[in-house]
Amino acid sequence: MSTPLPAGEEHPIGATSPASQTETGNPPSPGLLTNLPAPARWGLLAALSVLASWGLHEAHIPGSLLIGPMLAAILVATNGARLSVPKVPYILSHSMIGCVIAGALDLDTLKTVIGGWPVFLAIVVAVIGASSLLGYLMARSQILPGTTAVWGTSAGAASAMMLMAEAHGADARLVAFMQYLRVVCVASAASLIAAFVFSTPGGAARSVAWFPPLDAVELAKTLAVAFVAAFIGARFKIPAGTMLLPLIATSALHLAGLIIIELPEWLLALAYGIIGWRIGLGFTRRILRHAAHALPQVAGSIAVLMAFCGGLAFLLWWLMDIDPLTAYLATSPGGLDSIAIIAASTDVDISFVMALQTMRLILVLLITPSLTRFVVSRIGQTEPSGL
Image (cartoon, rainbow, N blue to C red; front, side, top):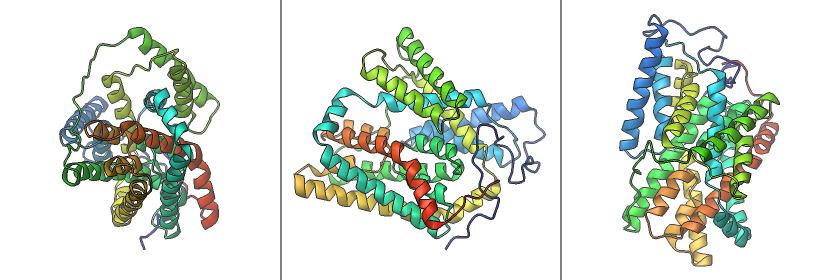
């Protein structure tokens, strides 16, 4: 059994709490970077972020635009950088995540979901149930605190899970560690299975057009709706409202044909980078040690969830005669963008894959807050405060 965080070890990196503070509320001990001027520390963070993101992208690692800046931020934070991301850019970055999820929804996908909803619902509920059970067991074993364990094992969009976890009092740093480890494992396994089991391309890293032609009017409309919705969510302190309200507003207008969601890659890179910085700058050497200590159990839970989803894929193939690769990609526990890239480069029923993945994403967003509260009530564990 892993040693639980000591009292005072967990603390959500909320919008009002500087990410550079330690569990005592004081700045961390001086480090290698502490005496550098602030512009030099920010410049170093930006340079390391670009380098890390580029390296991860070239290595075909999914989520590189967020993982790279997060790793860079962890490096500088644990060496005395004492930096924190301002509140307003962080809120605006939340709204971009909502727009990304909204852009994945379209009428064709929703029609596919409606047409096969009993099967889709059964599969999705099974995946959510399995991931929640794993979170419960990890919390029960005191490997991780209750809400952090459930948010970390939730099979939803990793970036969305981090933001919602933070809003509901979990430790976004440990949730990020768990979520992105799962994304990397699932995407790697899907690529390898597609390539070696089914002899099809596993999905190469997509070519990025950083400054594509865009419709300035649609971009302005997208940003206006997203930003207004985000600030409404912040003003009324709606949990995760800075992401969920933009998601609801832009998806509704997008499905109604009133806006085209326009998000150039450079803007997404900036938003992902800010979120990665916010999470990474909250890391301390102590939280890194705890993450490393929990790594075997976290990796084991990911392997169990992947095996369970593989079993569901087998049932789809056996009972419904769905081709094995389509079934495997459809039931894989995220991430949606990585699975979409792999599905697009293979001979599968992409509408079925995206419909099942999208339905899982929507249900995870809707019910995970209630699930975390239920788990904490079952184990009688109070979330520690203060890291």
